[in-house]
Length: 239
Image (cartoon, rainbow, N blue to C red; front, side, top):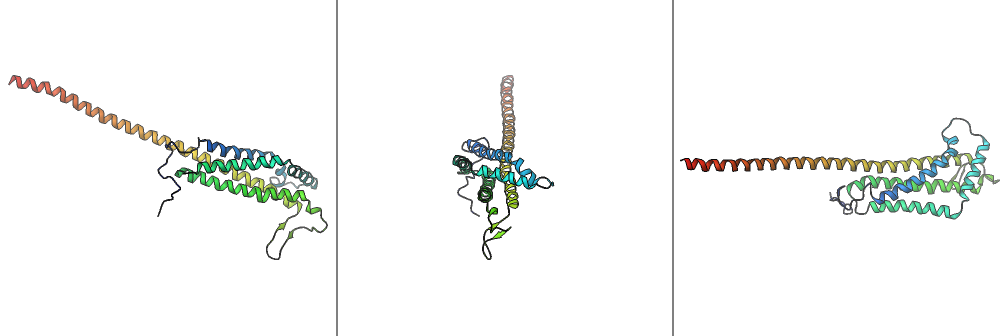
């Protein structure tokens, strides 16, 4: 089985060019993740009545939530540009850590990148599309009657207003779980590095102790030999 050429198998956590949990690339990964988690946390009070309580949701709340989503979608273009920039900053951090990566980078950062890409897919396919659908107000059209399916076999499924808002709220929850998974993997990388450093330090102490014992034995043998030489000279003189 041939080894991957893009992975530096000789690199470890003690290498100078190792980009681990304390590197700048990790910082520009965790920063965007925490940024989006903050946005989702601010959105959580609006999602809570739809997903996290068994009490019936009043129709007036859907009207309020629809106005809220329309307000968010009508934000100035600079808001969406900032969001896109932050997304690409996170991707840049992953690409920096996965350039000539060590085995630890492949395991932790590779899995984190997969989760991050899944989060980007949820954001673009569910959240952005849901906000556009709510802003368009297709439910107010006369020809709209509940669930609509375009095409005989495959096509686009358009849900009702309440179901669309529930899907949007569920997508926010899924995205939050995915981003928390990225943080957990980065924390796992830090823990693995700290354990490896501790093991490396213990190994060095054992090596130093073994070298010290060997040196003491060698010095003791030399001292014993030096003590025996004058005794041998005196014995020769006495003879």
